[in-house]
Image 1 (cartoon, rainbow, N blue to C red):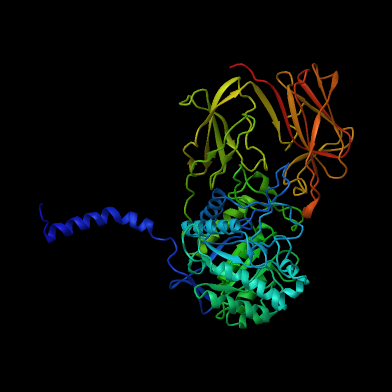
Image 2: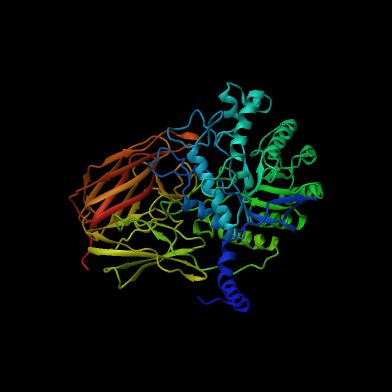
Length: 615
């Protein structure tokens, strides 16, 4: 055996270091330090830590799974959705996001609703494994989390539910010893939990920027003092933010020794201007405690731009806009129309779409991105080509969906008769935000035969590599799909039809519907005889039937008997309208289909199938 000398060993070691250094650097954790506070600033090591970013309310628990036939809108996000959320925040220049609260079981929850806290000292392991995944992904993407412990409001369960477990009124949450002890059990369970994904104890996880005592809580200072002290007794690594519900900082929060960060929330209707109050709060906190504008939104783009400038220029530690919704594992995005702001605003989707033009979504989000890098002192980087989307299984070419790509402004759909080509672009720019809880694309002109499909993401930087390939998809029929954003796919209409684009939450977030009344009709013309149809309708008041008929010449119609499925599960907290699906199969008739209303109705989507044309 040949023995190497010291010089040879040194050379080999040097070569190995050059080869392995990139890998070793890549293996280093993205987050090197816990965030600390000193002299009114947040610090990452010895460097000031400042941010502009977005709240992501669905990150721990999705409340917006409001598909047409869905009974329960609540579900836990999966790994694709969690990664999409945090990768989107990072792409927008954000280094922080704020989740919504640790949820609590409510007495009116539908069966199967996932919550974190089921009863005093009883916790849902599946929900906390989701939080494990969120923290693991936050470490990987370099996005830190602000996590509020409890809600002042009823949406996900909060202080009223803790009090209710013991037969108490909601205000007893602040003062009742047993209720306080129950809440401390939750805090202890969270802080002492070991992540099942990373093996890291929550108290040792650098992805947590801070624990927030609650969301918009109306807590007495004595309660805040006790809870902040208790959190610090269990966790000496992380900061505590007082989640007191205020637009103007309360003096007690600045005085409490175990409160490290103070915050305010801002929406229209407050007495002072948004910029004025942000600057005043920052001045009040200067040199004492870091100040974060925890939520602000529903102002016009000019006001929001001025607010971001105020955060940057005032020395505030950071600001978080309300709010961002991420992509849905079933395709498209989750949607959430906001009751505030004059029934105009929806939760944002990066990088914005045509549907967001009424509130300048794309313009505002690009301003958020530029401010997010500016507050960090980093030049604005160019957009990167998106990663390939993931095409979901296809049973019918009329219903093609994919899991989208961060930063994509559109998608290119391609079709081929063979697995290895010749690929044809059949749709150059599909907007995944155009449909809500429905397939993103329908291949309405597909010829008869078997076909393969793939999709590419597009943005200003270019076109991605193709998605996975799906096929062969055997097609004998083609389907006209009308989302009723306008009347361009109808042949004729009678009555006072209007395109409705407000009250979207009541229509399960459908962004555009054809609204009509008794006697109004729509007629569709197809290239071949109608074989079957499905029509999705909402009834804001009383449900009624829709009458259907077919014709060979577009003049003489004969009735078609349609079946229906009603999916109404109550108005709920958002005043849901009644959704009804009408359908018929094995139709004998012509190339024209007429819909006639018997009462106030909003038509959400129409699907009409006919024999596919030959190749």
